[in-house]
Length: 146
Image 1 (spheres, one colour):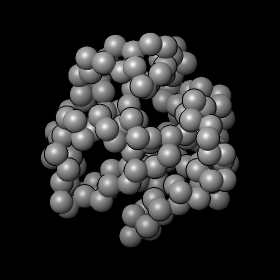
Image 2 (cartoon, rainbow, N blue to C red):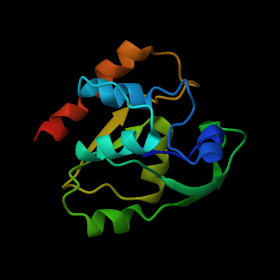
Image 3 (tube, rainbow, N blue to C red):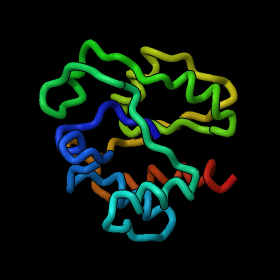
Image 4 (cartoon, rainbow, N blue to C red):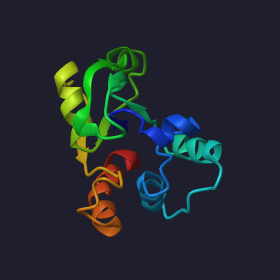
C-alpha cells in the first residue's frame, strides 16, 4: 500500500495514517471484519499478518501543510529495490490519486504486478464517505485471498 508522504500528524507521532479522521485503519480492518486495535504497533503487526505493508512513494518532498496537491521537489523511496528484493509482492495499491501520479512519474509499472488505484482515505478527500470508500477498497480482497 503506497501513500504519497506522511502528513503533519503522522510525522509528529511517527505513525502512518495518524490523523484521527483518516480512514485507512478502519477500512483495512473492515476488509477482514475486524476492529483496529488501539495500539499502533498492534495495527501494523495485524496488517502484516494479512500480507499488507505500508510505505510512501516519496522519501521526502516540499509540501504546504499536509496537502498532497502541493508536493514538489520530491525524492522517491527505493520502491524498485523493494520490489526486486521481495518477489512475493503481487500487487501495489495506491492510497489516492496523488500516490498513483507520483509513482507513475518516478517508476515504470511492472507487468507481473497488479495495480489498484483506490480512493484516498485522507480526511481532505471527504467526497466519498466511509461505506463508499470501503466498497471500492474491497478489490484488495482479490489479491489478498489469492
